[in-house]
Each structure stands twice: as structure tokens, then as C-alpha cells.
Image (tube, rainbow, N blue to C red; front, top):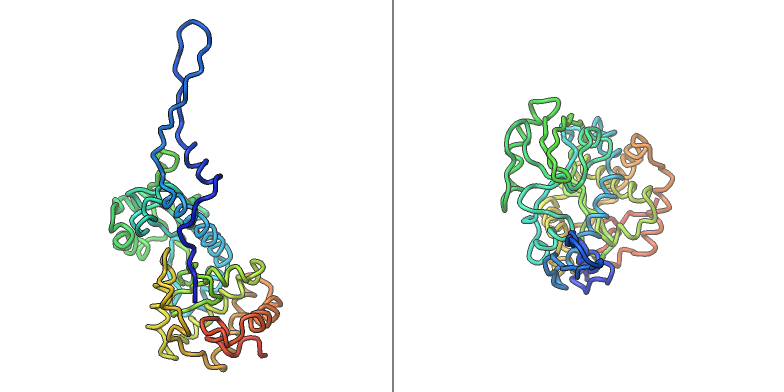
Length: 336
């Protein structure tokens, strides 16, 4: 059974930070003894549920940002090995408050200052976006002179603006807002493996690859002891995608459903009981992915000697009897 990071009571430090976010201007006293006016708290009231949800979003955003950082050399330096999955990318992700459900909608405003406009939520290190100076938290106004969508459907409809521009141009003029000021950036496109990298809000220790995405659960993220081990996990997922294993095992639909679910802020953990319908990966496919992952790690500048000890430790700690664990889905893990 899995457990997502739920809505808990926020710690005092977080609530204090929220309450002190508003700025007050002292009153001007023309004469007489100095008078210290009583401060008036102008910050909007934040319920404990929203404060706790903001804490969750902040924690998940930090994990996602680290995954992007670790994934970036793997995605950029291995474009030649990604065959048909390499694309021209801008190298950033963006969302607005409406991407988040329920209490998390208001929490996105509290945690990130999100509103109607799309806001940059991640920048791929080494990408054209990173080189152009785009930052997490920047609000997107227009791309190539075309206004970007705002409101509830902005996250899904922005692709209609970005897609044709990225396909036809070597760089993209981007108008952003940062610190209440508009700035113009020119973002070069980056050739990279076009795999989406996701953090999953669940505590079981697993990672999934459906051909176009790689999701690492919070449990797996925390099991990895360092960036080198996170790179090992991501490289293995990339290898499975490059080798088209989800299609060959007829598991694409099941894996996609699992990733869709776990990528939500509040996943349905009942879907993860048992094996979640995922077929075990044949040993020969897993060994082929392991071999390719060594190439991916080397080209990205990561250590390959971290792989074997990591997989052995994972197999001994969470063996195949743990039905929703990685080894249950990949029984050959740690056996070479």
C-alpha cells in the first residue's frame, strides 16, 4: 500500500513565513514623541489545510528540480542514442495555479505566487532555456510575439503556440515577467531526448517508463543515497524507453495509467495495490536495458560503478515479494 504526502498541519516556521509575507509602510507622524504604529496584518488568511498543502507543493517542487538537474546531462548528451525520441526542446516546464486540484490550487498561489499566467516550474540545466537565463518562477507572457494562454486551460493549450515555433526556429523570442518587470529573452532550442521526467507522490520504491516518460516515486527518490544513484535509476528508465520495452511487453497502456496517476499531487493509492497490473520485465530485456544504461551514464559524465551496488542493495532491501516494488516488476535486478 502506498501513501502520498497528505495534508498535515504546517510547521510553525512555514505559517510564520506566510503571515509575514505582506509589507507594511509605517505611518508618518508630523510632530510630538515618536509613536510606533500598531502593525496591521494585510496578508490574506491562510487556512491550516492550505498551509499544509503549500508545504507539500514546496517539498515536491524541490524533488522535481533535483531530478531535472540530474536528468539534464542524460537527456542532452544522449540525443544521438535516442533514435526517434530526440526532439528540439526549449528546456523548461510551466504550469499555473489551475494545474493543481482542490486545496492545492490555492496552495500554489501561497507556495509559488502562481496565478492565471503560466509560470516556469523547472529549467533543464545546460539547455537553451538555462543558457538564456530563464528561471523557475518566471511568468510567461508571449512567445515569438504570440500571446500565451492564461486561465484554467493554459497548461494544455500552450503547446499549440510553442509547438510550431520550436519546430521552425533555431531560437525563440520569449517575453517574461520577473519581479514585476517584463524582460525579453532569446531561448535557443536544444536537441535532446524528449523524455518527460516526473516525481511521483507515493512512498513505494519504484520507477516507471512508458516509452515517453520516466517517473521516479518519492520512495525510490529517498532510497537513492546520492545523485549518482538517481542517475542510475533515470538511465535505466531511459534505456527501457529507447529499446521500446513498454510496447514489446504490451504494457504501454498500464504503465501510462500508473504514471498519470502518480504524477498527480494527490494520486489514487488504491491503484497501486499488488503489482498494479504491470507485467514483470523479461530478464533478457532488463539486461539489455542495463547494458545501454551504462552507455548513457558514460556519455553524460556519470559514474557507472555506482550501478551494480545500487541494484544489489535495492534487490536485497525490497525483494520481488514486495509486489509494488521495482524488483517485482524487474525480477532480474541485482542478479548479474
